[in-house]
Amino acid sequence: MALTHWLRRHSFCLSRRKRSLLWKLTVVALASLLFCEFLIYYLVIFWCRWPEVGTPAPGRRGPVLKAMFLADTHLLGEITGHWLDKLRREWQMERAFQTALWLLQPEVVFILGDVFDEGKWSSPKAWEEEMARFRQMFRHPGHVQLKVVAGNHDIGFHYEMSPYKVKRFEEVFSSDRLFSWKGVNFVMVNSVALEGDGCGICSEVEAELTEVSRRLNCSREVPGSSQCAGGQQLPASAPILLQHYPLYRASDANCSGEDAAPPEERNIPFQEKYDVLSREASQKLLWWFRPRLILSGHTHSACEVLHRGGVPEISVPSFSWRNRNNPSFIMGSFTPRDHALSKCFLPLEGTVLSTYCAAAGLLVVLTFARLECLAKPFLSVWTLLRMHMAR
Ligand SMILES: *[C@@H]1O[C@H](CO)[C@@H](O)[C@H](O)[C@H]1NC(C)=O
Ligand SMILES: *[C@@H]1O[C@H](CO)[C@@H](O)[C@H](O)[C@H]1NC(C)=O
Ligand SMILES: [Zn+2]
Image 1 (cartoon, protein in one colour):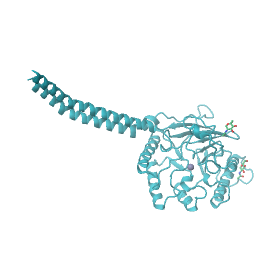
Image 2 (cartoon, helix red, strand yellow; image 1 turned 180 degrees about the vertical axis):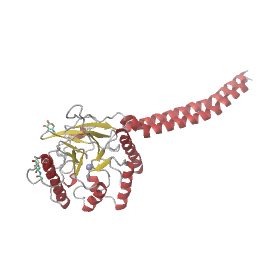
Image 3 (cartoon, helix red, strand yellow; image 1 turned 135 degrees about the horizontal axis):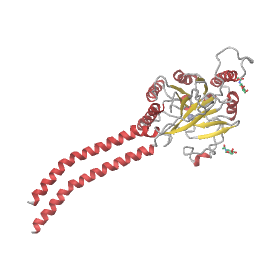
Image 4 (tube, helix red, strand yellow; image 1 turned 120 degrees about the vertical axis):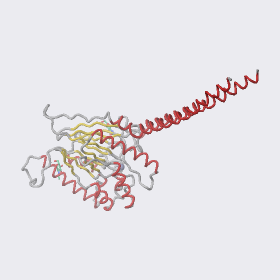
């Protein structure tokens, strides 16, 4: 009597629980996937805000330009890139970028160099393939402008750089050195070519920069003076320099913040023309442009430096999880006179990985709980049998 009763109850439990377990496992797996691959980007980037910029007269708001700056995306190439690394990190960057575009609606996006990891080596075919991935990841609506500055991984360090690679880069990303929008001037410097040794590309770049400097000088001087007649007048506003290499600094020793270089690396001296621009080139850029702000990449870590004359420089950390656990981008509000910056962190890769681990743990627990349910009726039957036998 008792035995059949037990069996009936448990066979019912089994068939019902089998289905509900499968359900639970699927729901946990899908929920963690949805959270880690989509929702987390919205949840994190949602909290980023455009900084407020001072306007000349209260109540009279001039137009404010909203620009986003990111650096060192290092899209992997076919030579050193591992497919899983590529898949994972590029998906993360794509989601982060697309979410940021959707939530924050910038007008201009600047990428400060090292877009590709192997642009300096890529065969024409590999370059095409990398470009296609870039276009997919950083796709953007027509009213958003995307501007890219060349980095050493895109066109090679000074001695690897060739007219062919520079041309191939500029054909896609334009060779304009000056971008002027809503009364704000941005100068995009090919800092890889500022070696100052008179190499072909270097002298071309220097000539272009001198011309930009002349035009900017004209816009800032009293109209009608000297040789500034003719040509289109630029807005009279100190420019913002955008480049891949930072201006010269001895090391990252004075950098602070949660995404500065790790303490053990901060004191390693920087090498001129390799980690940072040479002192000479840095001085030249400051003289030529008298900028109000400089933004640069290359170090993969954050830093704020004050150059002579009180010109601030911001090192923009890498946008890729490959280079750091806490990538970020800079959000800037600009008017012709003023600007304000803030930083927007992306989700930590650590959070994503621990969420997956927690989900995997839950799956295991659920499965074991189920195994116990399987085992229970047998145990009960066994006990009952033993009781019968003992009688
Ligand atoms: C523009 O003005 C600065 C500062 O007066 C000067 O150093 C620079 O050489 C000028 N640029 C050109 C092209 O003359
Ligand atoms: C750090 O700041 C101090 C004080 O401003 C300065 O003397 C020093 O040269 C700086 N070090 C580096 C590496 O920039
Ligand atoms: Zn670099």
